Amino acid sequence: MGQITLKEVRIEHETKRGGENKRTHHKMYIFIENETLLENLNNRNIRPFKMYREEVVPMVMEHLKRYEPSTYKLVKESKWSWSKHCGCSMCPCSPGFISDIKDHENHRTLFVTIK
Image (cartoon, rainbow, N blue to C red; front, side):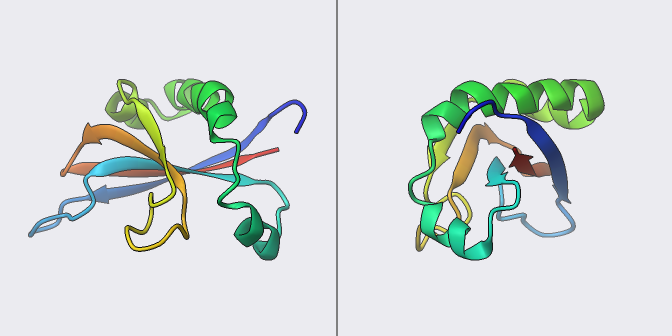
């Protein structure tokens, strides 16, 4: 894959609004820049998640620390585990990293694009 560059980190904020927020763990999805939908569907179950954990996750944390300190404060102590069921418990349609930290009040989903 060559040198990995962080292209974009988009953050989705979810806060509890009356009633229970079912989403509790922070999540991180990693996308390849310019990857087509068909390529994404073909590749989503063979992602190099060990390399992502070692290289991409630290880059994301550094980015958050610098540009999104409020989100960084929420996720900085996270241990990120790869799960093929990150976004859907029924099928492996949306693999990604799940934080070990539960936060019912301020859940964050990170959408990371790498180059």
